[in-house]
Length: 325
Image (cartoon, rainbow, N blue to C red; front, side):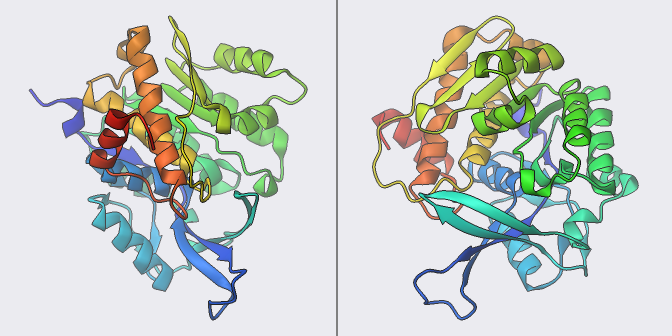
């Protein structure tokens, strides 16, 4: 009988180019152009860990789109979304103390031209997990389509994961956005968010009160909160674990760290045939701690490289064996 690892993981959401300001003056246009987008990064990280992954969002046929598509395929990711002539989305990125700051250019771009029939055609009937998050949910007709697709997937019995990855500069109507995230929380199996996301979604609450509010609103069997240099916490119906970061030097930047952690959670659960609400809820405490530790190690390995550059399964296994980055 096939295991969950032999069924495709479906990734939906934006693909874009991170145009990072060049302070060295070595580039012709003043930017280094890196491939990105939170869900796109999740797909890359899953592919590098050897997980069967389908990416369903449209990708442009322009020069940037050619690079985006080729990179996914090089990681073993299957592109099931269409290629469109509209331009590629871009994020203008500046780094402050290694932390990325973003300005987005997404109007009229290929990744936003989704339709419900398009996504239905791109998601195979054998799908076992659907992931969404970030800019795709910020607003507009495409956000409504992604929301409907996510809810329909959950209704069909597919395991689901949500990473809000909040980008306040793109959210024109905070109340409407928070309402959308609340609706999605009611259909999620796994939720991963950062402490900054939590603070924005639940303003004027302490972190403990905000987590309690989120857990009260979600159906998720696993909620994971990333806390930057402090590591991460995770909750299931039975357990709560705190896992610290390993000691490592050589921090380059944090671009894609959360996406790498998200992908590693999905990969670890798929490998153990745990992609399902009941199976996740039944995780023993030590297995939950090991799952989060794997995610943290993968995220930290990513942070030792420029841009989103997740580890392979072999690199992650070696770091865990050595217990160092």
